[in-house]
Length: 189
Image 1 (tube, one colour):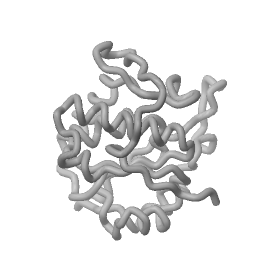
Image 2: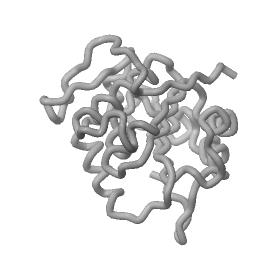
Image 3: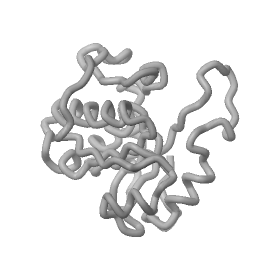
């Protein structure tokens, strides 16, 4: 297994150049190689976050096991005012996630405070729950929301769940002990 690397968003130096968002031109995001075509537009990300905010979530962090450039993760964390735990196999995209969490924290004047101060990103395998929880200091039932939109083959018009990486059953099995629950079960998007 590839080594895990813990990244603190506020400690990341800016690398590369941000690109204006497709849905809201007054905000720009960082994308590592091949990240932009897969990135969720900001207005779509916030619409999803607004929808989830209607529900009563358990306490804990927002986890994205395949966060890419982290735009959706930043929307959930900022809207729900919850710390983010982003995991991305590609190191450069994990750095982009840090920079995008910083971008959103600055936009909403929460840089270095609340959710942003407690957010972390891990460059590594999204199914390595025990190792990640150990280095991040998480315990059982500490994940309020597991959101996942894993990578899919880019040259296909149709997709099958088996094509997604990391694959969904592996992610769910790995993180099950860490998911906080409501009377209706754990919160998974």
